[in-house]
Length: 113
Length: 108
Image (tube, rainbow over all chains, first blue to last red):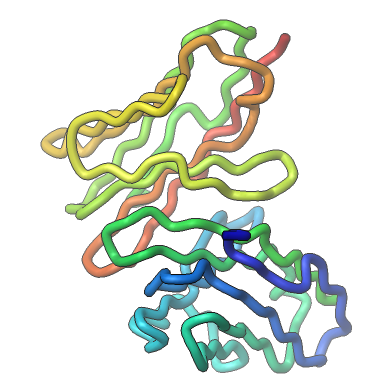
């Protein structure tokens, strides 16, 4: 398996634009997580899905952020409209179930100017 | 006070030294993770444990549930071990809380 695949690896966009980050989890994994990492706050869990259903989105910073998982092999994290303070590295991770280790993608480095 | 505290924040050692990184947490947990973040940014899950000890190669992780403390040990450290090591605890159903990380530098 190729592991968790995220795209794009880097994204630079202007303030106010819509940004969509994509994630393909490892096949057979039932749980998918979106994290954000910044210098100030470290790693934070934004949202996680279990069997394609959002279970906990309490980490989503505000209504500008939304995440979907239309099927077991694909998820998106959308920011609309984007702001400079959204600049961070966004990681997607998946795990087989709630009690097993999570595998991380390489991350998407987002810069909003 | 953070729910997850790591120490030290930064650690520099010489190749071959035995390394210990500590993680203390203040809440009840169901599992604890140790993650490694390479200088390039990629994150690798090293261990997930809920009791006792786990070993993988030169890495050993221990946890003491009563004391709410875990340690990550690296034996015969090598410059390629240089990375940020992150402790994360799981509370309830899948909610991970992260420590701020320990930056380890191993000099040749």
